[in-house]
Amino acid sequence: MFWTSYLLAVLALVLAWPVPILLSRAEWPARAPFTAMVLWQAIALAGGLSMIGAMLVYGLEPLGDNLIAGLRGLADMVLYNAPTTALGFWHLFALSAAALLTAHLVFTLLLTYVKIERQRRRHRELLSLLASPSSGRPGTLVINHDSPVAYCLPGGARSVTVLSDGLMAALEPDELRAVLIHENAHLTQRHDLLLWAFAAWRQALPWFPTTRLAQVAVNSLIEMLADDVALRSESRGTLIKAIAIVASGSPAAAVPEQSRAPGQAGELAGALQAAPDEDNAAFGGAAGAASARTTASRVSRLLSPKPPLPRPLRALVLILSGLLLAVPTALLIVPGLLG
Image (cartoon, rainbow, N blue to C red; front, top):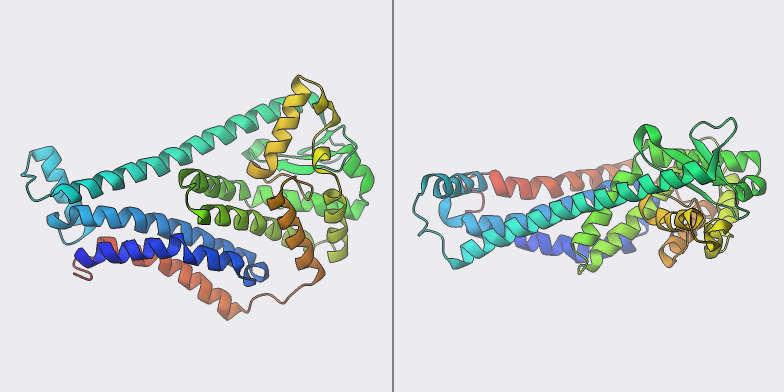
């Protein structure tokens, strides 16, 4: 397994640095957001698998010619007191690092989930006090605020879309439908799961600039995917106008006026400010440079539409995504591969 560990290490390095940078600068993802999303997921999964696998394979090298055989040898040492002389210092170090990194990634994933669920639960409690159901729109709540605000709060059967009075007054019926379809697409396609995974990846490995690039790219892609759903029933001009109206609200206007006072309304303001980062919120008016870039990308994409990426190229990217996951997996489990 000597060459396998080094090849996995090289693959992990490539997927952690140059590949995400090049992909974040590419223009084609806007022409195929779903395909680009699959590729980003493959890069993240294959990168983590290669990183952990490289250390694990190196550590188990004296015990077998593949991962499974090595793990069996390690189990014999732990459970049946087999001799441990085959493992040197660096092998034990690599095994410890692999175990710690795996635990760190899993723990961060679970911790991020708990944090987001706690925020959403508190957000729902505040909305139950400060928002009212929208007449004729199931699963939609309305907050009393003059600025245009629209976002969704995922939660399975408890998922809701939140609109402001200002938004409903500023939009024409077809524009409001476009906003609602956009937000509903976030809920039905479970974009919150993607945001959760990439937010956890960034928190687990914050020293990798590419984790930030991946999170920003995924945030932009899910907005494009939701826009594409809205375009199936509403015109391009309608969607552009709706985005422009929502984005015209000032950053401070993205929270209710009651937030200027302490208490529950102030807590709701904090929840609304956090929502764009973690709950697919803010149709077009989220504060922050990343959200502004996402809005600009969406509008530019709609104003100057380019033809979808040709089907053969999309198929090629999907095949590449599959290979990114298959190659490290094969290197780990195929006996004697690369020696």
